[in-house]
Amino acid sequence: MDTDSAYMALSGIHFDKLVKPGLKESYFQERHKWFPRECCSSHHKEWLHAQLSGEFWEQGECCRKVQKYDQRTPGLFKLEWEGAGMIGLCSKTYYAWGDANKFSCKGVNKKTNQINKDLYLEVLKTGKTKMVENRGFRVADNEMYTYVQQKDGFTYNYWKRQVLQDGISTDPLDI
Image 1: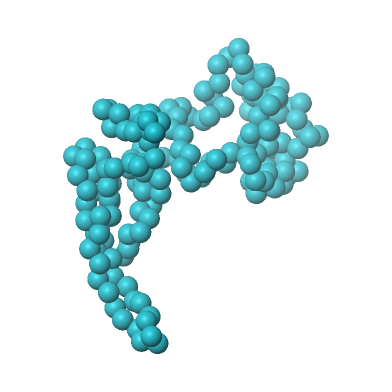
Image 2: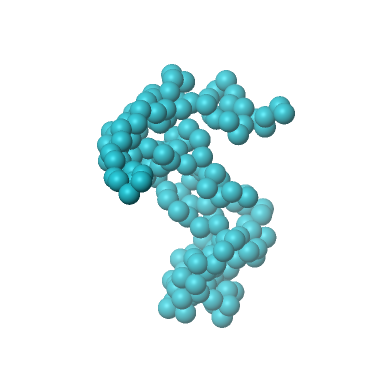
């Protein structure tokens, strides 16, 4: 799976709080297979009891080491960013806002273009492409040249899936 294109939006304080009550024990027993562990094997029973009973559990130094190690383990889901909202026009072209804003716009010079939430929102609402100006240097035949390029920087078109009428949902392409 191309994880650069995998986004998940949840409405809750914490992912663990979204689990249905009847599935909590099963979820917490299997959680370490999907997410970084929050406890070491010596403290797993205490941690599990605290999670199921809603009690506070204080993470010890040994457990912090395990969690830090798991943060670097390939294949586990890790929180990359959290905030109030996100506009994703396509893979690698998104704007997310909250306590700290985060954005990506592949192929667009970030220093020479004014990039903000309103730009992404306008493209999403109008369906119209926004042009950008890229500037840079090129070397050809041992000589350096500057260039200025006008290009479609933010586009509503999404070539990997069919965008539905609501502008949010998608279906597989009919090919």
